[in-house]
Length: 279
Ligand code: DGL
Image (cartoon, rainbow, N blue to C red; front, side):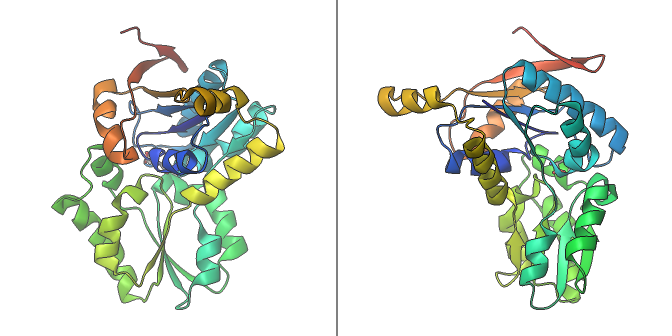
C-alpha cells in the first residue's frame, strides 16, 4: 500500500497521476485539513506534522510514502528519510529544472507557498538549474484556501491568480511552474489568464513515474491487489483519511479525482500522534 499525504486536497493532483499510471495500486490518502494551510507555518511546525503523519501511515502498513506537498517536502523530506531509513519517500520540489531547460524567453514564473520558497530544497534547485534564467516568484496568498473550499473558478480565485501572473506576463514569462500541489486544480483558470502559449508545468506525472520506478526496483507492487482486480474484478483498497471534516472531503473527491472515490474516515491529533475517530 502506498501512503500519500498533503495538508489538504492538493495531493489529490498527485494521487490522480498515480491512479492513471498504476490503477491497481492500493493506497491511503491522508489530508491534514485540521492544519491547512501548511505554507504559512514555520518549517519546524510542518516537520512535526509530517513526522506524525508518516508514523501513522507506516503503522497502517504503507511501504512507500509520497509527500504530495511541496511545503512538507521543503520542511521535512530530509528529516523523514533520516528518521525512517527503511522506507522510501518520494517528495515534491518545484520543477524549475525542466522549465529552465525549455524556456525560450528566459523568464519563468514559479507559484508556490512561502514555506516552499523558504526551504533549502528550493534554494538548491534554483542554484543548480536556474543559472541564466530569470525566475519570478509569487506566493498567491489565499489560493490554497480557495481550492480547499472548492472555489476553483470564482472571481476571488481569478483575482489572486491575476495578481500573481500579470506582472510575470508583463516581464515575458513563457513558462509557469506549479510549486504547490493544490494549484493544478486551477490550471484552466491559469490558462485563461496567461494564454495557451504559456507552458504550465505540473510535476505530478513525473512524480507518479518516480513512484512506479521505486515500486518496480524494490519489488513493492501489491501483486495480490493486481490479481484481485484483474481476475476477480475487485477494486483495489483505497482509503481516504482527514483530520478535518470527513463529509466535506467526501463531497469534494468526485470533483477533484473525476470519479466516485469512496468514503472518508476521520482522524484527530493528540500530542503529536494521529488517532482514529470512531464514527
Ligand atoms: N499543497 C501543499 C504544497 O504543495 C500545501 C499547501 C498549503 O497547505 O499551504 O505546498
